[in-house]
Length: 126
Image (cartoon, rainbow, N blue to C red; front, side):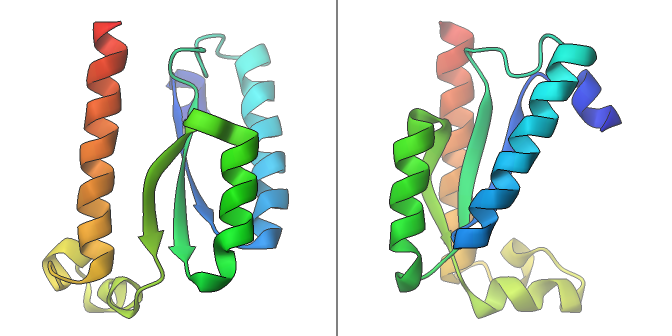
């Protein structure tokens, strides 16, 4: 919680599974409580909470649609796929980009980083 007291935005990884939506609602409630009590700059309307959809597979399409419908442009376009190489990398003591740069998970994280940087540039220019 102390980190949220000093933050102005939140990046929320969201597994594309039904029960993750319930956890998201609880997390956003906690973030709002911190904004009201400790940090009015948290979730500035220009920045807000941005959500990354992860662990995506073909069964997750309904959750993806629901998240996009409810959160709109607060959701990054990049989706991190469910990927064995991403899951293996921590047990080898390496970030996935060093463990297997070419796997689909690594490539998705690179696209996400580019998307985050681009959004930050646009927000700072506004």
